[in-house]
Image (cartoon, rainbow, N blue to C red; front, side, top):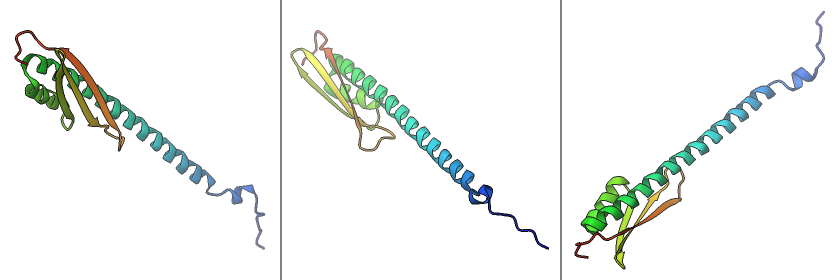
Length: 119
């Protein structure tokens, strides 16, 4: 005689733990990826701010071309512009955020032109 097991809750929920684990792991990976993108963007913003500061400082003492070069060395791949007016140098640096497509990070720094510069 074969005994038949009644279909109980255990049979109807078979595989649900696997699905829940898969969804939990996918959610965890998504959260970690978003956090990593945020950290990468924050580090890029720090680099952009430092680049703008360096570009303004160098441009104030050595000229706009040297300032642009210094800014591009500090943040490779960034767009660096240097302008003057009113005895000041303004450097603006724009770079794409790493890990966040379509987001641009921007920083601006101002420095007073050093005495004796032929601006």
